[in-house]
Length: 335
Length: 240
Image: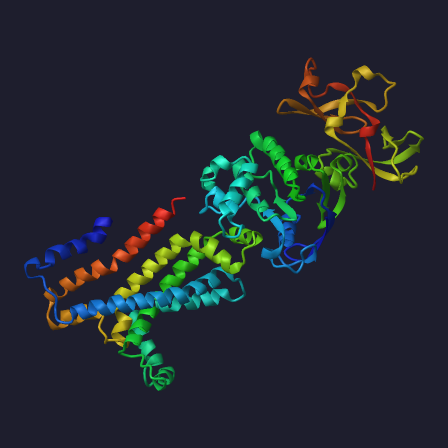
């Protein structure tokens, strides 16, 4: 499904993107993601397609806002039955939908007596009761606690796949985007990149997109050499091999982006391996079971060392360390 | 503090002459007038005040503060002064009152004048309470209702009204008590037909304190059950 929506208030937006199966629109807080969903739902005046010109109640969409907005005065089954026409089979239809999301046993409960995940599934069943052509999810992970988030997300994605309705979820959470079938990145009111998450996460189009996707290391330099199998990028005191990328030419000013997780200790690799660097530890910080290491030298890099690689290593500030980054993990972007 | 508030009512128990408990002539008629016309006034207050309160809660425009301030005017005005203003406006020799008179509707010392006075006394309280109740309903829930296929009118009935119920009930109870007990405006605009508050005043003037207490007991008995019943009912249904 192609989506194109433009609006000036309350934020300037000109969004054009595709929705395929479970699609995530990733953007920072305040970019206008919720505004976009409300515009598609017909709750905010906007130009665009599909559904433009239809009143909110006539648009074939399902909308799950943050917090799910279940009606507190109605039981779970009554919430699901809310959009269904009055008739003999209304309750049976609602119960059928609740059964499909695994909540038939809780049908008589009011929303206040449901957990966050249960509320989300009731809201999902309610949104799907109208058989929408498009399901809109606003920050579906925001109301979930970390302990159950992944489990509930897996269930949510499985359920929306089962129902066969295309989904547009907006989020600032890159983790959710990783689980999507398709993703787009919203910056300054426009979609600046879209595609399968594997491609977007591997090849962010700009530094700002890379930052949004979790890249921590950014270096500015120039393309030094282009070879058949790759290329070399160089700064003042450093040279890094990178995979071959289209549109590059020697002398071109570029930004290099490297994920902290893609930098690994490289003592055992010796001088023959590409991109082995000798750096000095400048700062250390524990992050759960991992260790974040800030290193300085010819260049400054941030490395996230997993628990298994910390074992037997006594790192302190000032320790010299050999590290390596594989050429395919060195992402080069034109400036 | 509760004892302080209720102490005068306890005095009523002791002040009443239980051995010679009887009504003064015309008391039963006053009870009938108060019940009948207060009910009618309450109905009109709810019918006209609810859309106004909804509009005030939902519509945002420049200069709304002025409308808010103007709405407080009837509340701020002393009841006697309000009665004088109504007489100046709806009286038979006033421009507007004259028009009504030509149409055969007299708005002083008549049943319509009595109801009109009660409406002016009760409406501001109801509108303020109802407006607060509507403002307490999450706009997001109303929007969700729209995305679920319900139009504005259905959303009002299915979402807004049930969720504003507690506040609206308080507004209805307040308006009922205000209408039943309205004295100042009624005294000026509709001395006749006499309702309970004016009849209490007349009994005090013509007979004395002993003629006040029986009617006062009846006033409490007929005025209090509705707000109490509404409050209990809405709280019981509000336990979701």
